[in-house]
Length: 128
Image (cartoon, rainbow, N blue to C red; front, side, top):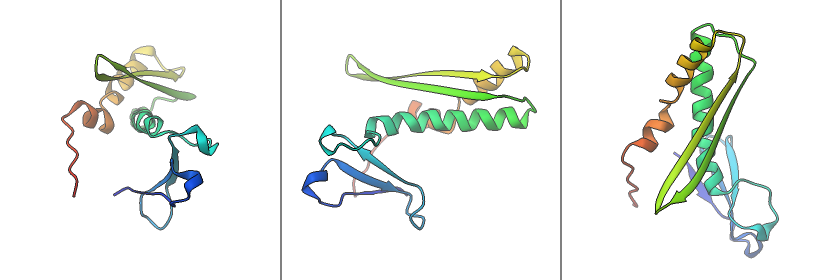
């Protein structure tokens, strides 16, 4: 479970903290306004980061499991609104001396990461 809180400080009304709840580890900050002067990620950027990081971790695991060495994995995710629809565009690049076919097969597998499945499925938000 992830929870988010805001201190109530009138100078930081757009700055929130999100945590996994596990003894203070895994805390990130989101700032949706330039008013605070913070350099944290916006909620939109955190959303994109979830897909980019999940894809990167999945690909790293696939490459490792298949014994394919690599120097670098770069995943770029961009989000835009087109005709009322949210479009996420993902670019995946791997630096490796392995045969291109092996790397491409691993990339194709990573494109089916957990977050990809979640985002391509039907999402429902339930308020309690």
